Picture 1: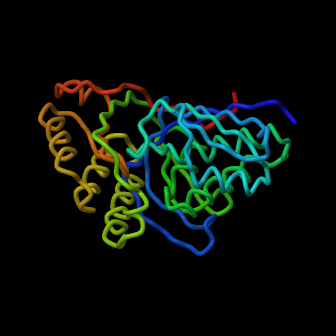
Picture 2 (picture 1 turned 120 degrees about the vertical axis):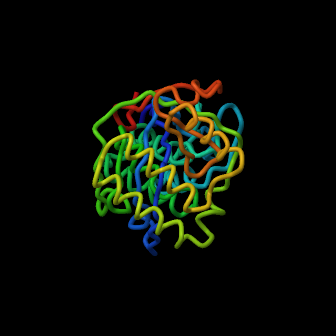
Length: 277
């Protein structure tokens, strides 16, 4: 047993998706595409001193269901301490990053000897069970600009990617509840997501991805007034922007938000997936 281990997990912005439920949470998930970010979450795991697990995010103790499920599945008690460069509940996959980072670091600390795919499966299933995400974990494990062609954890899913890197800008105006959206009527959303995926598969470029994402946000009726106005501002300066799913966040590739007069946070697409430090 080690004293502690730390993992870095890139943030993930989903541009569009379709929901694919299943009784088995490791087979459930989403199809779609997104970008992973050099801004992410650093997760440190150490054995619990009193046998009771605790989760601390940015200095505050939280109850994060996917993390609890990961620890229970690994049959360990731990202190999980995380620092996020990204806002919570705003479409950056922070809960997925917490689950995956916990799985990777706990496996090392407690010498569970599980494979990469097994750990990703545990984290993905935990997030699906919690209703906090459907595809962030598998994307964050992959890195780059992943395209999720089939839903689920690694033993059943199918991934491709857009072979490109980009500067990413984003502004966040607040939180949206992923669980509320995913627990509602998802058929119209999923229909729009399938159309968007077909477009990007046919033309796997960043420009095609941004166009498909923007069209999806409108057709799925997820745009808030402030998000729609911001995307419009970027379009007026010939930029490409869309909404992060699911959060009240606008992201742009290149300098679209800066050109439109905003003061965005700037990062880049992450060249690799989650990793132990």
